[in-house]
Length: 176
Image (cartoon, rainbow, N blue to C red; front, side, top):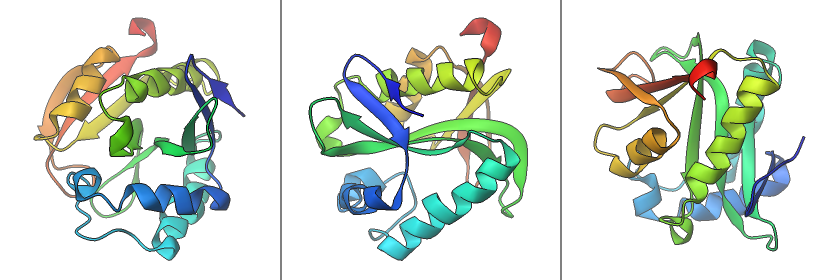
């Protein structure tokens, strides 16, 4: 599977993506709302986005982690997620969430919205999802703004997912 937007190409995440992906977390600004005080090791990325992705796939075939690059470059722009939302205890809910982690040189260019819109369309049209959710730290205004540009609507502030307080947004297929 490969998705293309005006500026981006989105592909399933692989081990070959891990060094470029790891590099984006060298920035404390990128980690700020992820509760990661230090950059993750490659072994942690493997566990999070390769091994755990197998469980996401078993839960919802076609879901997982996806790498974003610009059409004309190999530089790693960021990671998109379309996966089951975890409760604080690690069990998966029935809600499928979209998320994004972009390298800060690519912030403020509309790339998160552009790439996430393509993944929303994939979720609705290919995976047959009826609703897609997103959750962000309440202080993460940039992610909240992306959610709103995607047409997502605020649902509630909750600590039900990830064991931390977050603002929960959703969009239905009918509204997309």
